[in-house]
Length: 448
Ligand SMILES: Cc1ncc(COP(=O)(O)O)c(C=O)c1O
Image (tube, rainbow, N blue to C red):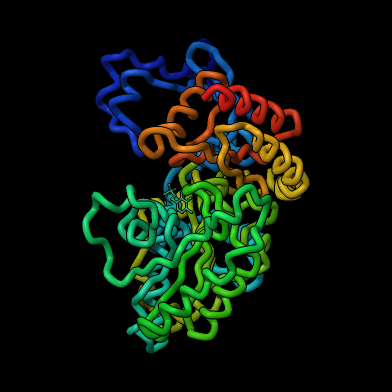
């Protein structure tokens, strides 16, 4: 309590019990949370602080966003300055310098050729935008029949209707009707023989042949795009088997199918490289991104596309008319651009991505040291992302959920998904922070 920001604004007081009902919380057990709320009041660097002054280490970069650590002055000051100068610029028909500069800065990091950037406000919007780009580029190339999308079991591609159709986590789909027609799911890559593998597993490349089977069954010429997370993140860190992404690329090329990497989590250093594309040496046709792009300080996402895709759609349009009928009121919002530009400066100045690469083997070893705990049934890791999976007891997910609550109470924040505890610290994490995370996990998991 009592902390105030630089402008002297006091933090919002923690809500009284009677004030907890009105906010319908996303992806949260509302009834339980409102009985036993777990709040944050402020954050700095590697840590969150609760209203009663407790410190929690952030083992999940908030929600995979805060790669440069919390409350970076460079970002908040850039946003403040921006809001005082140009708070909003109509994004349709008008532009502002920050949007163009940011697109230029982003393409310094994307693989060669992916040098056109469409801005959105979230990972979910980036996915649905990429689906529309895929449909449209095939149409202008005279292949309007390409309307099928392929994704994967256990995938997470956000919560908009396109992303839900692509998604492969049942609870995210089962309540929401039939979804889009023509979306088929390859098998996931979590094989029993890959338990406790560090980095990319040796087994599983053949799972990519599911795509070849879909090409035979539905006609490769009818498939618009394949969406995969290079490492499946939200479902519990599934790194791609060796050769798997290359094989997908090959089958896509053979059949004229676009390959989209959903890098909302993998992008911006999490895999120990700019993007998963570089980490795994496979270049997709589009990359979706969000989260760490602004360090989580402003909502923003983007789709980076191969120039030929942009050229095809743009050249097909009229000389003075709109070419792509898509965009959001807040696309390339000036404050989000300012935050992302400040983040680009931090990434460069602090060698954030190199640091992630350098720390990843220490991080991987440290997390895998939890293997001896009886409750732990699998550990997977790659770059600065890991999942510790505990054995199910009672209903599926109950134990993982209980673990993340106890970890909060013990001073550690992370996200659980099913029985997997996702560990993705800010990329500024030092060895002592990794140790603190692993020590706290050990203490809680030993008696879970
Ligand atoms: C791979 C992937 N795609 C899309 C999304 C959705 O992003 P958002 O929650 O910003 O809409 C996420 C979020 O975790 C993600 O991990």
